[in-house]
Length: 157
Image (cartoon, rainbow, N blue to C red):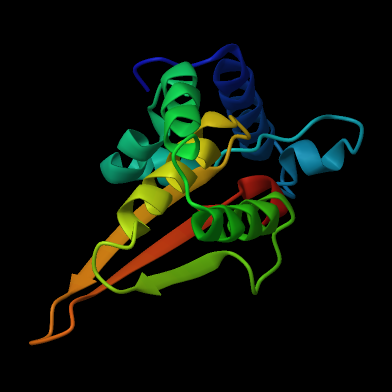
C-alpha cells in the first residue's frame, strides 16, 4: 500500500501477530484463542498475493469522499433510489445482497451511478475490499451495459 492509514497499520499488525501466534501454536488457533483480542479486518492474505487487489485497496479516502459527494450532487431521483438501496445493502450485507446488477438503456446514467457508488463505498473506510467490475455488451441494438459491484468485508467472513 502506498498510503496506509493508521487503521491499516493497526490492522496489518493484528494480522502479523495472528500469524506469529499460529506459527507458534500446535493448534494454530492464533488470535481466536484469545476472545478478548480484536481481529484483523482486511483480507491480507488475498491482498498480499494479488497485485490487482492491492491496487483496489490503495486509494485516498479523502479524495474518494470528495468524488462521492460531487457525484451524489448530480444524481437523479431514480438514481438516488438505486443508490440508497445498494448502499443500505452494503451496510447490512447478507449472502443475497453482496452482488448487484445494474442495467438500463444507453445514456441513462448507469456509469455515473456506478462511479458514485464505488467512490461512496471506498470513501467510507470500513476496511472492506471493493471490487468494481464493469461489463459492457453491445448487441446489434439496443445497446446494453451491465455493472457488477461486489463487496467483500473480511470481518463478516
